[in-house]
Image 1 (tube, helix red, strand yellow):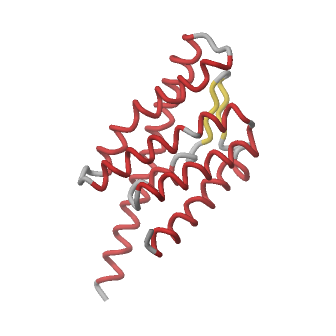
Image 2 (tube, one colour; image 1 turned 180 degrees about the vertical axis):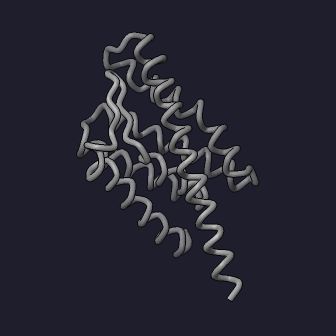
Length: 163
């Protein structure tokens, strides 16, 4: 792992921990049995542009943050971030555009979270429609935020290199 990957991974992991812990109250949307903390996917989505290992570490950090704030079921759902982040990072490394990576990982994310909640006694309707579709809508919102952040970071990078 390169130094810049470690640094970016540490910063994104810190953000993945802080979002649910510090902002989980007022950024959280609850439609039982579904909950969504807005912007909580942004760190893992940004980590996909760094490396697969970085995405795994940020996904684990995200899970830990949700464990502290919202408990084991939400933390188990957040473990899906490790899977879709890793797959997204590989797709990104293979040259897929960032927006394509975000769209390709959307069904993995939604289906993964829906499957995670099934053993906890949710009906297929609640798991699939409420959690699965809710997760995909949340993924799309956070994808928009992530695309805007990447666009701004690229602008800053281009501006700094023009000096």
